[in-house]
Image 1 (cartoon, rainbow, N blue to C red):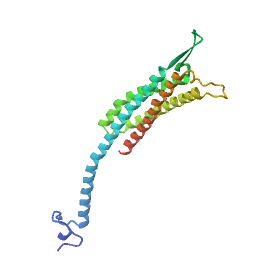
Image 2 (cartoon, rainbow, N blue to C red; image 1 turned 180 degrees about the horizontal axis):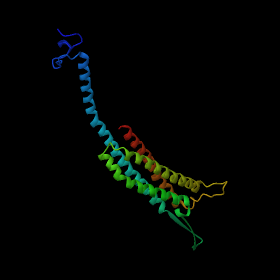
Image 3 (cartoon, rainbow, N blue to C red; image 1 turned 30 degrees about the vertical axis):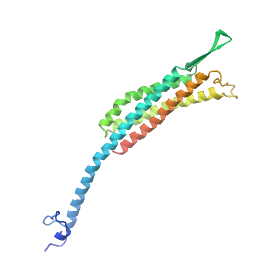
Image 4 (cartoon, rainbow, N blue to C red; image 1 turned 60 degrees about the vertical axis):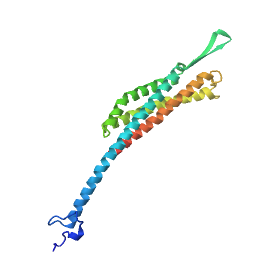
Length: 215
């Protein structure tokens, strides 16, 4: 006879032989703990795999953002057009350095591009050490600062490009794109890479936040 509260043979399978004096409740808790430990062991490699995948995607997005900011800075920084009028000695010339806003655009994209290049080693470290915490926090703050910088540059340049195309009758600003069509095409196209880099930086911040939340 088994004492009151102890496991009887028909309450356990053949492979689960009760220890002497062990109650059914104690045995059930032991089995539950072993099961939870096994599930945790299986989930750990899966979590590390997801974190590594996020880190790889982070590295890819940084490369894309580097290409966008570099292309924007080069396209804007090499933009100029000269129009001859009447004689070869009288000419009108338009270049990005004539407008401080466009100069700021080139500088902002250059700074963000250099930062993204310098952040690549840290991004590679995150692939190797996917559970890094403080370096991800640092990247979130720096990425946010660079996002603000490139947003300011791109937004200011977009306003100038709009005025170049449309002008402003009330301020008596004439649209210059009818004469400097090549210049306007270049400065308009240079905005694409910059706004693309903005999207990439937003995604980078979100990825870093997701990686931290999974720890």
